[in-house]
Image 1 (cartoon, rainbow, N blue to C red):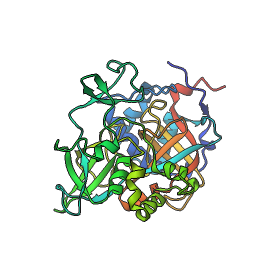
Image 2: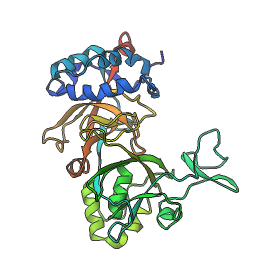
Image 3: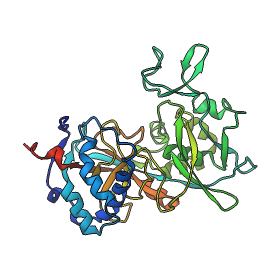
Length: 369
């Protein structure tokens, strides 16, 4: 069994602030969805040593239970797991941010009002890995395109929005706002309210491959918004006040996202994300998938975060997504749900937090100092 990283410091459940006040039955429902998915495809082990196979007993019991009352759910997690404080890298505290699924009006065709397209994955977008990466190509790039000189970097946001992919029939939905479209790119999913009254969901299919550059950081570096005041709301307000500078700022983020359509099977749940299960509002979390193993429960203690319910945030979350900006052992992105209300919450979340990973007992017992 691979050794656990020293980033994990085993503690007791009594050391988790607010553990007994949380309703872990909501997290259990999210955990149970992962328990069924892994019957099809196991999750990859993170590099911090949390072995997916050690989740076997907890997953098996979760699959055999439909629902649990809050106290029963707490006992379930206490029976199968040992909490461990996650040491941040280069800081005293970890960091949580928020994300959500936007809901916007859209049209299946371009009109006078709906002029901003969402695109399907282009047929010439090539996945890049160590088997086909050309010598000298930026090692960050996971996508590219074939050319007469071999695989090269794909078109970036500036080039695509200026027409590099025009005429290929990739457009499948049209929005009224370039800013709305950009935030759908950032979130990686959306619900589209169509003129016929139906709701369609779009979710991430691929990206052009370049690094993400957030407009908040760009505006802060330009002195337009103080960094401490950067939120989704303040960014939107700045764009509304400076419509002639939208392209100037957004094109500095070279990464461009392509989408696919998906069903809205359960309106109460979010889109299917990287862990291949629907996200659970307030209970699913994005983590650094290179470090952590999907399905891992995390108890998050963020006393300064009150946006969710007006109380200090102390909740059990399940690692079921990832993101290019989510880097480090004590870094998480909390899924707030779908629609404008969820966006109001997610847009202001940027708080220090303590991360407690719930590790399968088989990985921890006998290893305490």
